[in-house]
Length: 157
Image (tube, rainbow, N blue to C red; front, side, top):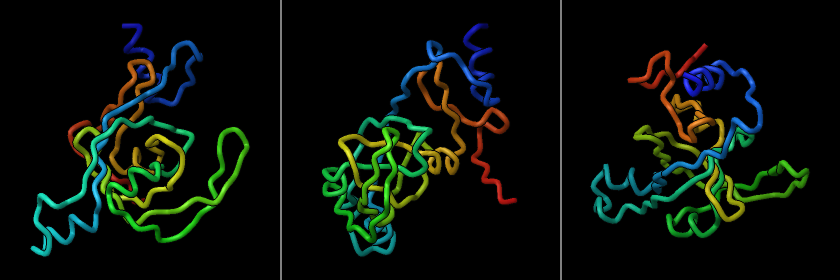
């Protein structure tokens, strides 16, 4: 019951004590969205679609997803622009932005341009919002929105 009460607090946005929260790490599949598009049109064999399954840290302080340059290269992603990234420690730097990546979390896909920085994959708020997943800090996992757990709902207004 104690864990359920904490989970409800997380869903409701009620703050938990630091000792009740932990880092959330999840498996994520990242796929080159352009490769997927070419395969759908018959211009690329399905087995040639570049994809990586890896572990990622869920970072609710990050707005966008972040991938290291090594993963960007493995997926064959081009950079389309540069953007200023502000870090939690107060640093700021200009980083590359990729072309679209298919991000699959808990079997729920979304597409996003990712920032290129650091040495680990970070899942940010936009991917969580678009997959309708909540962070269960107590149990260290992502969970479907309890209001509609079997379907992704995207608010529009």
